[in-house]
Length: 322
Image 1 (cartoon, helix red, strand yellow):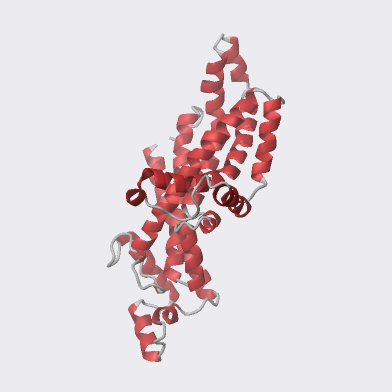
Image 2 (image 1 turned 135 degrees about the vertical axis):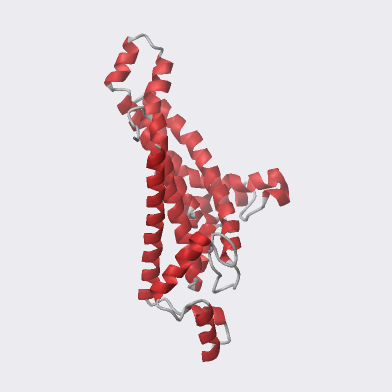
């Protein structure tokens, strides 16, 4: 297992290098503007632009800039480790900006994940144990409705109903826990968590139902029942454990994708997270900011794959890495 994890970590580093390389190629081969012009502001005389390009290495070939950027990411720069460079738009170190926004995105992603797991998987299990019942039909009908409602529609609708009309919940914006207290912090997060969880909870309910129904028809389940094991133990220990393997795969990728930035949700609820900063960076042609966000999103996805593979060995005894 240790050798397997080490090999996968090396693959993670290789994947990150390739992703950064492809991102660099795209931005240098496509007409995306001159970052030095953005950084210079109103002082756009040739001497100032030449000085900026020399300072940030923009006067070198793009492949040398790629080597410099990747070296700073792994070894650090003058702003600390990891070396994420400086923003061409705000002239500030990107490390503090991105990590501060990443904390907000993590609160959104983890809170939403708890909601959709707490709602979706139990509904899927109950539906699988009573297939074609009234509860099953209602639950799967609501799941289809949830899958059909995108965040850019459900978010404004939820704000209109629960904030503007009923006044049950506060509106948009981010309220830090340490500054406003738990009550104010939690009340502002309920709506974004629930909105982002609707789509995932509906999908997880359908997937859990299908996987558990298929697992309960396996030979080893019939053998367990023939041995006189209680139905509760058969479902929880033998059926549910094996049926959750595909769910773990999807959950790892979904959570990693949200940690890389929930662009629509953060925009609708005015949350200053990674997703919102992605839009700002693209609009300002802030090359280093876009590269940093790309690296962070790729890191979460690749690490999620590694964690999922390790969890497989504990959920399914048939899976072993030697």
